Image (cartoon, rainbow, N blue to C red):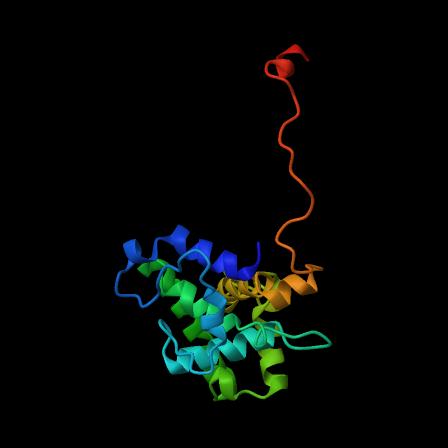
Amino acid sequence: MNRRELLRNSLLAMGVVAVNPHAGARIFAAGEDAFVELERADWATVFLNAQQNETLTALSDAIIPATDTPGAKAALVNRFLDLVLSSEPATVQKEFLDSLAWFDTGAQERYKATFVNLTPNEKLDFLNLVAWPHTHPRWGGTEGVFAGYQHFMVMKRWIVSAFYSSPVGLKEQGWDGWAARGTFTGCEHQPGEHKAS
């Protein structure tokens, strides 16, 4: 299954209209290519505001940067997540937005700038800081879990899932564009055969 089919099926499974009929997302009919909408030059967010979209783009690009292969920005991770989140329940949306906002708050406290405005080295330094729970005494561990780590894990799960379901991410895993390989013949046992063994 390619990302376009995955996007269509995930929107159907989430019941976009049932969850929030005013969310701005829609169910795509069979044969309609949902990913084309994400690639449009005049694409606009349906859930995130402009500042949230910029932060998500910068954060996803810092977590999965372009190297010798394309990164999260080329995979349109922010656009995909914007569309998916528009159909999620309010509690899921709030968790995502709280974690996303924490990156600006944390960056302001540490660097006196929003996450988008950090230098590449500052972004890397910040991600290295939040990638660990900080519960070990050598980290100056305290009771409970470091909030930055919790927010990082929320965002990382969303971003990595979106990236590796994209054509870019699937290609990086060796996918060659075919939806399925081989022929599935089904169960070859005769009725009742499994009881005999």
